[in-house]
Length: 221
Image (tube, rainbow, N blue to C red; front, side):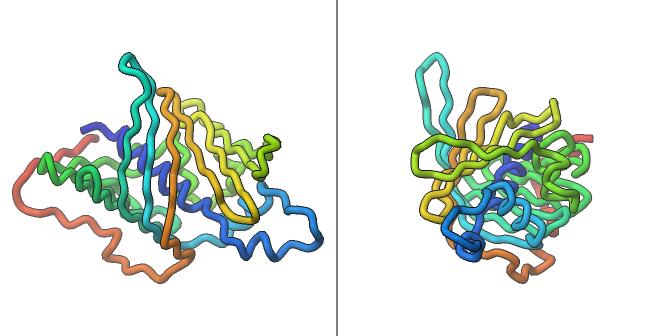
């Protein structure tokens, strides 16, 4: 099990952090919609923790044509530096970042792999989660015009080593409508979040990995 899966999952945590509540839009003055880039930066500045249920849909093109893969679970985030991903379907997996190391537990394989958090996340958009630095440190931000009834903002990673080519977030009627991630492997992933809580109080034990007896415990660095 490589840490590519960990990196991709960390990106999903970033996407969860970008869920903008309606109240941020409603607070603007006048009839014109506020700049999505400004809203994004303001929201991240005040984001300390987050929890949500998620559904992940990935489209892949290959020799057998276009294929669709779905997974679902729940995430928890505590900035800076800690997150927890619980995949329920199609198989159970647990990913925990405790501020120092990232652990990936695959129940089906009875295997845990772990690596230093700095090495696992370096060069990925997930750095935005574990750092208090401004969003512009890691991304080029630009509003998009598509004339499809949505307000769009695009985030392009500055790191040349990033697996992600771009993130695009679309809003309709002052609510998040579409969130897309395009990676260097030609995959397009859509994210749907429900039961979102922004800045909830989270127990520290959520971000502590407890090794069980048996199975493989693989250190990747």
